[in-house]
Length: 314
DNA sequence: AAACCGCCCAACCGCAGCGTC
DNA sequence: GGACGCTGCGGTTGGGCGGTT
Image (tube, rainbow, N blue to C red; front, top):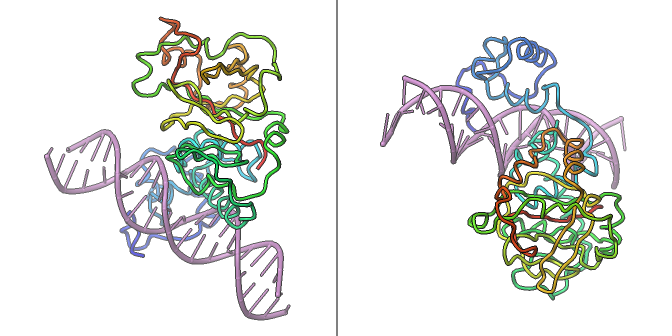
């Protein structure tokens, strides 16, 4: 424990912030804004280092901060995002308006601790492929590059079909970012992803295949029921979330390629806008990244898009 | 009531990345 | 190119609080 690296001044205060300090910081930031944090302490009359001021503002004082318990939807979002990007807390926080990376990190660490303390689930069955990280009854399917810790199902859970479909709105992740080396060779029109299709067809969506995780890159296989046949390469840059309600049908051909039919474009965009203003999703972005509709590939062909299911209850 | 324990979470720490000179 | 300063990020710490004994 040395001196705080940014706080070389001798009379820099540390520890918890007092209400008076908070007031000073709020007053200064709301009237002057923040440009250079290193100047803030002196100008605001605080005996803190700029770094501490920045942290206090971002994590606690800024007006759009959201407090209180995480909602179930937020929990799902965090878990699913973590399954994709790992411990990139800032990235995860960017998808949860009003939540800070620190808060999410704390929540996650507490959550992991809880899971670890409840090792009541029986050991997973042995029938998984060597590359698989999905285990029996596991609701979360993680890419192999991600935390093994959370791959393990540490708590007893109800049967898969009950949990996944008990929620009115299970979620899917959608990544419009093409994977490296794929997009150039597999131009696919965006509307292949979101067919303007018929109404939800529960028969097409087979509960036994509900763990379909990631689909569309070339040769990517899937997880069905109890077995993971393949896990996709590193998935990054997840941009948005689509609730399962918006997936109207799912089908799989003989080669294991999976087609997902979603809501119409306008409906999807409306939903996205209704969720979080910070979502980066835009249809134009999708179209652009997927090749701008120059060429229509075979229906079973591939894009860089990625879809994942994740638990509706934890 | 007091001591103990475990957890939460605000804050700190160190480092990487970036821009500027 | 490298030194420097600033910002942002992820990992870690420890004070405080609530629950338990």
